[in-house]
Length: 572
Image 1 (cartoon, one colour):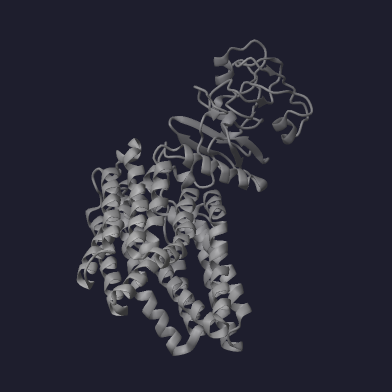
Image 2 (spheres, helix red, strand yellow):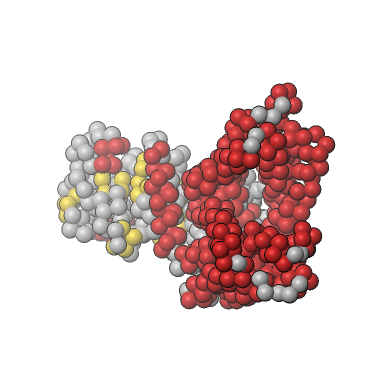
């Protein structure tokens, strides 16, 4: 399945709320999210009706555990094969699995093993779907519209949460779990053609690699070159495939025999030829770079495959005229032609030229087979070294850890302690939902928030103060007002965090970046709920809400202290 690319004539600055491409993506995403809500209601109801409470808990855990464990791998898959392709395939599998179990339940009735298998399949595929769908916004609109898209996405999520529950309950009441699964499958099925119709924009030069390619970073084991291919000529690594022996630029020896060696031998230096940056005769560095005077190509940092015979730089890059392509650092597989990534002015490429070639390209993540683990390591290293993404991920983690406990199990226990009842708790939750929806609407209408980093920081800090205050308000009405403020500030900071992730991350890493953020929010943050419940049982709601607010506020402090994050701006 090949992604459809926007033509150059497509308007790049069309407002997202008027862009049919974005609206198709939003419609597909929202339909899929509503289907998810209906599915989980049907799954939990069927599990409770079929088995004991502990067995029902196991079924729900079977769905949640693989999603958390495999999420990072799902990000690698999204970057390797492209988010659009992965979203379409994974959404189709989710739809087929739900409808298959629905049909089975109509024929045989509910059984725990059927529900467990469905939960396992759905949770596993979700681990691939979520990073891919999170990486799509950067490819369906211009960078200047990403804040508006995040606001529209937030509205879609709020709409799905509002209508998904009642629709799921209605389906269960009418026809049981089988009807709920059927309805969920139909909703997910509606999303598939909408997602297929979404067109991907070409990545502008300098924004990073396209789908299936890796960004190139010229760093090699702490050394950074200054040339054109990856780290530049004569870096700290090796080049294989020169025609004669002579010292390389960095003092390492080049041994040239190509002879009849295989690709593997030329890559590893076995069967003749040794390590280092190469050429032949007495050519200068410039001659070796430009291909004049015969001999091989230039060496970047890490392993490189060179050509011979006076080929130009372009010929060596695209694999014409015999020989193989060029390289940078980190594993990249070239399949079917040039894979090119640009970052910070450096250019790297890996060429197939009729044979599978594995080169090193820093930060790029796409090696064959067993290189998937390396892809993941490179992605995590990219986040850790990024001056904005690293503190942003930490701020998101702390914010979610401090937020999830009080606003879920904590609110239930607070309402019970104060005698507000179920209706009072529902009113407080409604206040939060209205505030979060207002924040999403603000971004969707306004489209851009000046000084996004500063606004995100202060919204996070203000939201933390409001969380701490919620445990001390005197009545339901005051609690609703505070919850509305929490929703507004948390919704604004969350949407800005999402927009900054989309704009700061190299598109070639968005799957892995989204996977890490999703793992923090969906995998780690929910662990705070049992901890919050136990702490409230021991010390009461007041102290626990204050501690949770402090944890949430610490995320804002981290962002405030990170200069590059604090000063981050969204594109115009």
